[in-house]
Image (cartoon, rainbow, N blue to C red; front, side):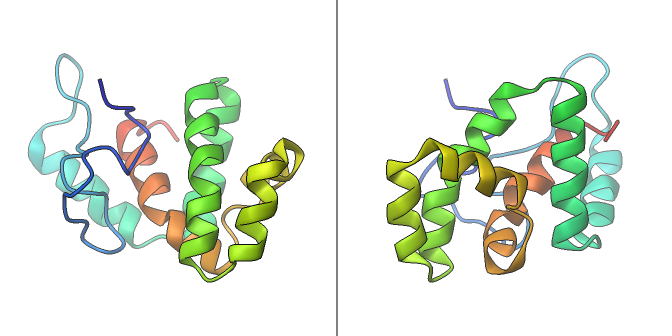
Length: 130
């Protein structure tokens, strides 16, 4: 079963840049928003700055003690750092969990934040209370 917060789930699928990866939709089932509402929510989230996406996602995860989100974030930070051109930081973080925790709290900054935008958007689409 794929990790609901892992934008790398479904590798080989195309991403739309700043949107969520293909195959990563909003929740379905009872209480889930209708498709039109999901599209509107996505459009609203796309308009937010990366810093705002990060802050909302982290605040929501903190309030709900959403360890799964934080774990997804921590797992993706080294790859996002490498993709954003900071391979030295990625190497360090692989070795240091302390670095990862710090990075999670500041993961909305600069190129790193931009690389993690899809994760923030996906998480906030699934949790409209954020």
